Every structure is written in structure tokens, then in C-alpha cells.
Image (cartoon, rainbow, N blue to C red; front, side, top):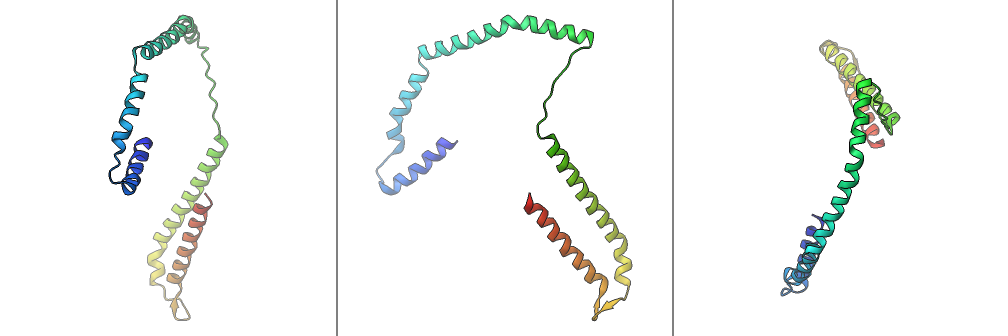
Length: 153
């Protein structure tokens, strides 16, 4: 994909420099030579021989390995060593995400439960209803806190 993207870009640049230049006609003999060299009978036989050698090497040890695995399975002694890297970081990230989610859920629950009661109260500061003002303040604080946390990651 990157090769085709580069060729398309080069074609566009070269068309601006010289309208008569045809990148396909220029590259066609080079590509044909590479394809012919890669897929000659000799190259194909060589790749086939390498593959056959790898299969033979694997096939010699395969029956012994299978017998060992089956014996261990019968006796219940099959063990697996799994190395998990960065498991501590994953745990901390999940813990942080869970705490954030828990705070968000509890806050939303309180807001939904208290909203009708607070909107009907008539407490005012400087003529402005107190609870909508507190709600707006909490919203801006929460949005700022969320943006700060997301920016840090």
C-alpha cells in the first residue's frame, strides 16, 4: 500500500514537472525484470527446497513432542508458563478507570435524585438561584477534571 501511495504521489509530482512523462511506461521494464527474477524456476525450486527442509526438520521431532504432551495430559502434569508483561500497569489502569467510573455513577445518581428537590428550593445568593449555580460549578469542575485526566494520558 505504501509503495502504491508513493508511486501515485510521484506520478502527480512528475506530471506537474513534465506532462509527457509516463511513470508506468518507465517502471514497467524494471518491474517485469524483478518479477521474472523472483519467479524463475530456479528461485521457485530453491524456496521449495528450503520449505521442504524446514518441514523435515520439524517432522523428526514432532512425534516425540506429541507423545510427551499426551503422556503429561494423561497424568495431569501439563504445565504452561505464561509471561504477562506490564500486568502491573494494566491493573493500575483498570483500577483508576473503575474508580473514575464509580465516582461518575455515584455523582450522576445524586444529581438525578436531588435535581427535582433542588430546583424547587428558593435559596438565592445575590439574586441567583443557589443550586443551579452549584450545578453549573460542579459541571465545569467535573469537565475540567476529566479533560485534565485525559490530557495526562
